[in-house]
Length: 236
Ligand SMILES: Nc1ncnc2c1ncn2[C@@H]1O[C@H](COP(=O)(O)OP(=O)(O)OP(=O)(O)O)[C@@H](O)[C@H]1O
Ligand SMILES: [Mg+2]
View (spheres, rainbow, N blue to C red):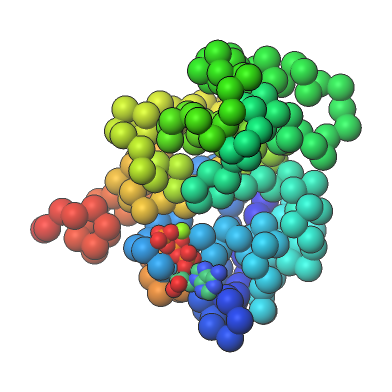
């Protein structure tokens, strides 16, 4: 469904991704794990067209899309929840949700709003509240709900667990699992929390210094000695 072929990208003259090959198949949860600065966010930003690929290809659903604009990419159904959430702090919760649907022309936006408040009851309670005054966990829920309002065909998540307490993380991951299971939405999850990500994903890639160092079934990587030592903090 999504395929990166020999993808290179970076900032100004500095190349960050040195030829990434990676796939997400329909219905899958695929995770990309790696240390700080490995290039995880750069990879997502390149898929979303916010950072330009310098070479290589990005394919989505049989269409080559590495030359498309960010808006066109969202229009194809590739929707990203960026690191740090990026909700519109001065707008209300409801306005943020409505903005998630800005590219849609169908008549089911109302219905989906109701669905979001069923999935995240707190967002219903806080509909009129300024988004900047939500707690960190609530802001992550809003960012996720806003992305879902775009009716993604593939959801790209950049470290949804960042800075949140374990209980909130568990709630958010449960909802991500539910979206994948019930809607069949494939998910590409970038995480530094390797343990959590590997437990949730079907397949995984490990990125080190802008290159894929390892890939396979998430369950196999959970048991891999090298992964355990480097990313799970378990000495063998
Ligand atoms: N806007 C930018 N301009 C220049 N360099 C950047 C920019 N954004 C990121 N970089 C550099 O690119 C490299 C990869 O950063 P990236 O944000 O992709 O890492 P990451 O794997 O997402 O890390 P983290 O887990 O800390 O979020 C880093 O060396 C970073 O300094
Ligand atoms: Mg990052």
